[in-house]
Image (cartoon, rainbow, N blue to C red; front, side, top):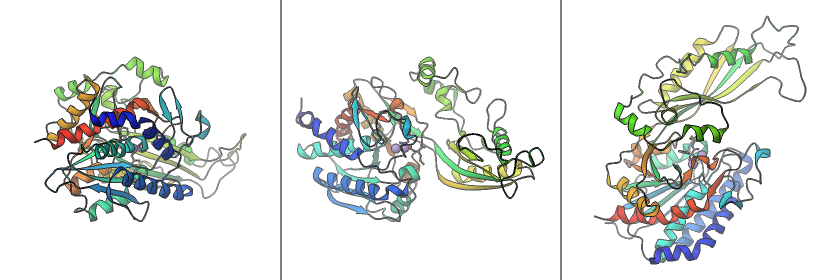
Length: 454
Ligand code: BES
Ligand code: MN
Ligand code: MN
């Protein structure tokens, strides 16, 4: 075994303990109650970066949460890798579905259970530890910059401003990100696409006040009934989205591209078993792989209104609400889709209600090529540590800032993630395999090595 791997081997216990410490801090960016904890997490990440050997580590203040920056510039003539990750996490709700408290990490069956274990503290921290190992064994072969943000789960608005106004500071040759998944622990893959996003909140108002559903029911439009109907009408009998123009900019894949996509290992039976569903559900004419990667979607993330307390209250509510996300694919534009949705939603509302559409964050879709040096470096690195060539796959999730990196910094990203779809990110009992954590720490230095080679 070489010095680098020896070093990692010797430090495994500490590497794990440090991650566990990080996971104990509830850095929930969406909930302002936790703002102190989010900032504290940034401070811990900064401290750990310094200890690992990074120079000029700072908390870059923004209007929201700070961005942790650090660097190691060995030689201006060497290539520079810009590592991006996020230290914020999703809210842990619903709490009662967790087997152990979300911010009291436990190790069970070789996995760490905690909110953020995989998304993205565990994956982000692999980079800090891989960097430490390279520094301590004198094996770093290129320059590194770290940019770890605390608002990814809420749309990265402030990172967007930071990127636009710090182009010199962020000068690099490639961006390296671990915030995605592999197909399985024995089937490595590299994510070569992300979906974009348009996220809106809708409010439907009926009568000016809540009404007795006996006195008025049947004669006044019930906003919850109407909202449900409006949402249902946004799909036709083939589960195509009915918003006019929605698919206009979608780039259809060629038959060859579709065949390649569908040749990735996938078992529909296992998929259904895992989710305990009798059948999958989606747009006619497309496979599950396509439905979750190269096709756009519309999903209600939450819907509420009226009485939801104990027992039964008879009420015809004044208002109904829903949060709706649309996942986008090349070449759809987030702003355009938000506009199409808004126009359509307003146009299908009956006169008995008023509607209001409020856009939340958005992000553009992207595809990453496989025929360039950085992809090949990542592929070789994973091949070395997994013993198999990774399969390029298009991911269904979104990391909106990645398209912005390309637009503003002119840099491509490598999405070399080590999670699994079954890690329950954003769900109760999120976890991250210890195998995956150390596989990441071992693979990252090889990426640097191959990327630095002439
Ligand atoms: N790490 C995820 C994105 C992801 C997960 C990509 C799995 C590919 C596979 C990221 O933290 C995330 O959750 N993104 C959000 C978007 C954001 C605007 C809230 C998402 O995809 O819902
Ligand atoms: Mn993430
Ligand atoms: Mn996430």
